[in-house]
Length: 226
Ligand code: E4P
Image 1 (cartoon, rainbow, N blue to C red):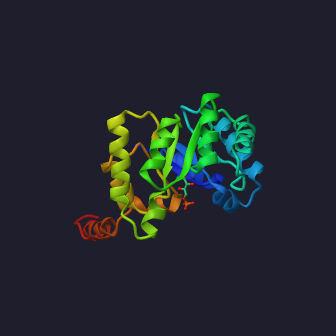
Image 2 (tube, rainbow, N blue to C red; image 1 turned 90 degrees about the vertical axis):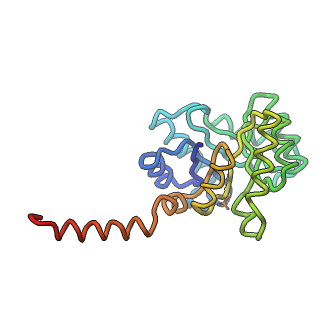
Image 3 (cartoon, rainbow, N blue to C red; image 1 turned 180 degrees about the vertical axis):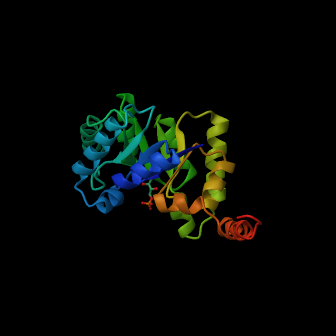
């Protein structure tokens, strides 16, 4: 299973890559806003970071960049996606899963521009994303759970359908908020998870590990000769 970092902040991206071996990046307008940069500055800096780290190429290290969310017709979406995709060979274009978005994503995939169909909240949306050949589909796990919905059932249905049908589109369990959700996505054989750096780091620690270390430190200090 691959781990992507959900961020447009270069320090977070760099740390996640060096320390935890992440496999790609996802961004959205909220992450760009949080980076404190303009859209173009933020994605250009990511493109340069990829070059510096010799990570150019979508298969090496995909980076999802979302189109302007105000766009509401397929023609404009396609136009913007083409502009963004020229900035880096790693860029996969995030397109919202509405009717115009699905039309745009279909056209982009036919023209060889890879897409990530995002804001997916139902199995039928995920099915259509696969049918049009999107590279990635992003069902939002954390948003579902925050709404009191059962993410297990939702993701299990999508995973089963994709396996039965042999769809090539890779599923990104998106907006992951906890280690428990990471484990659930792994159990359900989801291809990728994406989450923020804080979620990732929180998932890698446990209070019992800290407690155990205190016990061992105490033993070490009380060992004869230490
Ligand atoms: C991923 O592709 C999405 O942009 C992301 O997971 C949305 O989550 P957020 O609520 O953390 O912004």
